[in-house]
Length: 85
Image (cartoon, rainbow, N blue to C red; front, top):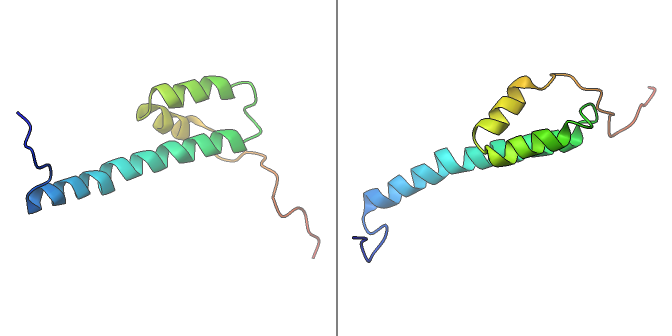
């Protein structure tokens, strides 16, 4: 049976805040970072669809594996452009 008043005690509020701040927010940030990195990188053109499906359908392990497997340095063009000093 479910209580009529959810988060009725101090410790329930603390537990919910802990769960949100230390579990859900980092997972959402990890997922978002992996998706943004996937679409910014020009070096994995045809593999993007496969990585996208992997990240979306495995929301915890997909981004972790993507971020561990991807090449460290990509030839991402500098947004400011080449400036000669």
